[in-house]
Image (cartoon, rainbow, N blue to C red; front, side):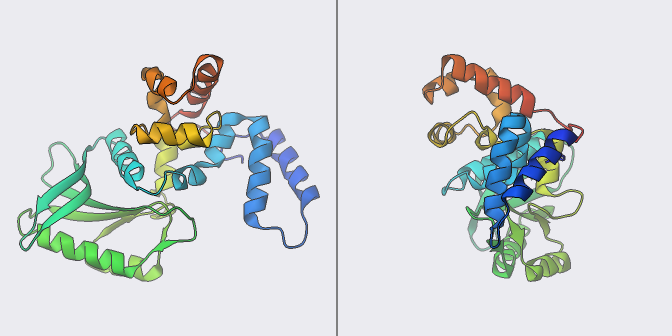
Length: 252
């Protein structure tokens, strides 16, 4: 909670409340729900940051919002990014989720985005095996091709071992250390609209269906909120939360 932006006093108070409510057999998800509910009354922006992993899991079954979100993250870091590209290989054409390129460099990075709706799923060895095979096929036409597999959960240990051996880049919620997905999101202040506590589930899904994924884009596109049925005082509350949440590199 402190890393999410709660005050020391607020975090300690919530911690004591949770401790008093503990019982034998309580699940970690129940502890999280209670902590989130209390933190939301203490500081909404902190609650949104605290729920970041859940917010990404809430992108929905299509996977498209995750691909678009990854593209936006790399754009914020200075890359050029395109989504849903068809590229030629020596044997077949390949559909690439995100294509990354740094201005002035010859290397291009071909991204496979593996989205999971539940935190317990891991991206395993067979995924990195087929991605590496695709990169090798593409590299016959693009000598500077690099591969990257991105997931919102974790990789299996075999997947990490194989990727290191082959020089295939991996990015997950907690890997690599110091440059993991959640650390880079925090640094860029690039929070998804699903992190906003002032929107309900239906409104979030409506915005995602319009291909709106970033909360920081909402102040420049207030019509998107109106089309999701969010107007007047509620729209003001959403925009206030956006202003408090989207602060790049906030000191925790």
